Every structure is written in structure tokens, then in C-alpha cells.
Length: 137
Image 1: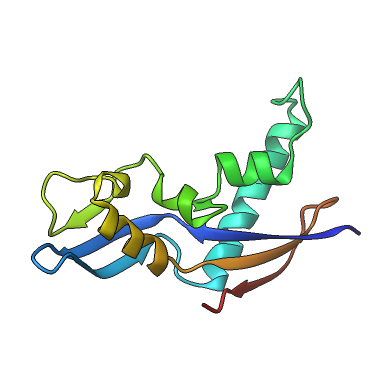
Image 2 (image 1 turned 90 degrees about the vertical axis):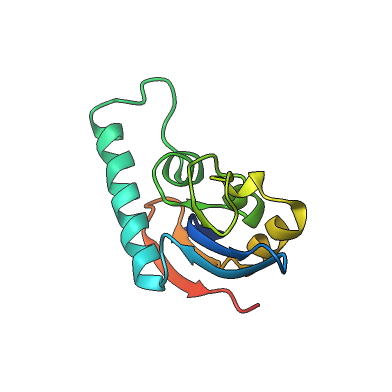
């Protein structure tokens, strides 16, 4: 068994902004708890392993970090990756912006700081998810 740990930050679902005060008043992430993280990772691991069984990856064996986190999980491996995500977000209170990275720096910094993250311990040989805990910050 080879235990490794990664830190993950669920993708952003919606943001509410008070534009007059330049203040992020609410941030909702796609996954809100340890069980949601576990379910998303288990589903992502199962998908990658299915592709491996049918030789969908003929040139390179799938890797936990690259293939599970990079392709299937609804999470980023850092706060910066999560706020840089190019998918559309529901941004209330700041018309014309549909992605976090389009917001002014002062608001992006607030969003980045407000993200809730989790530490995930896993067996890098079997990809078994061993433990998940919310980061204390």
C-alpha cells in the first residue's frame, strides 16, 4: 500500500456579489461535504478504471491525479485552478461576468479565499479512497 494525499477544492456553482461594496457575500461550491467528495471521487475512479479495462488509454496507463482529477472529478487541485476554471458560473450582482476569472482582482481574491478545500488520502496503487477531511483554515 502506498498512501498519498492531495488537497482538492470543489468547483464553484454560484457567487453573490454586492457590487457597491466590492464584496462577495455568498459562495456555493458544487460539492459541500466529505460524503459528496467521496461519491464524486468514487464515480470518477470507476470511470477511469472502466476506460482502462476497455483499453481506452492505449498509449499510457491512467494515473490517479491526471486522469481522475484532471478529467472527471468536479474539483481542482488548488484554489487557483478552481477559480481559473473556464466553465460558466452563476454570478449574481455583477452583470456581464459569467466566470470567476472575469471579475476584478479584489473579488477574485475574496472568492479564492472563501473556497472550502478537503484533504484526500488514497492508495496510489489501488486508488482506494482512504480518508477525506475538510481543511481547517
